[in-house]
Length: 145
Image (cartoon, rainbow, N blue to C red; front, side, top):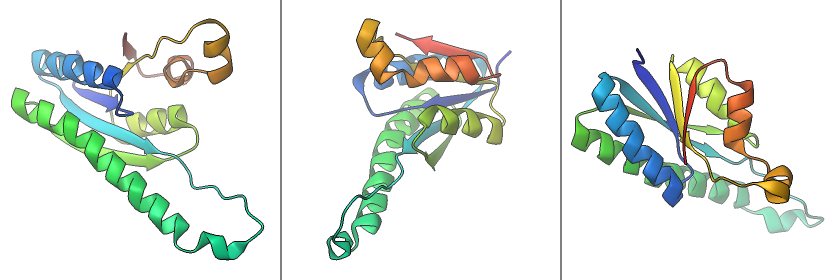
């Protein structure tokens, strides 16, 4: 069955629920988990370059801090369940692409993730990274709601 699960997180409470269920699944299957946090790209729009001093470095540092914080949640849950865990992060403005790429790069055979369940106009306008992963991934995706 599945032996290596990619578990992306955005730090939300829905992600935390998906973490608990994914770790339980991994334990039952004897699978390992790679946790993933996608850091947004750094962008600037300004006419005054002096306003940008150390901003990129600060943004990167903050993103890495967030990644560690959110991935630690998965690591602690996995450790408590005796599930092998590896942490990974990526930088992208398109999280769904980074998720699919990470799954391929790490040799994952299943992606498990939460869905925020946006519907109607909000879902259409905001979009859903989960939906995009479902549409574009060739690797099976298990969605927790």
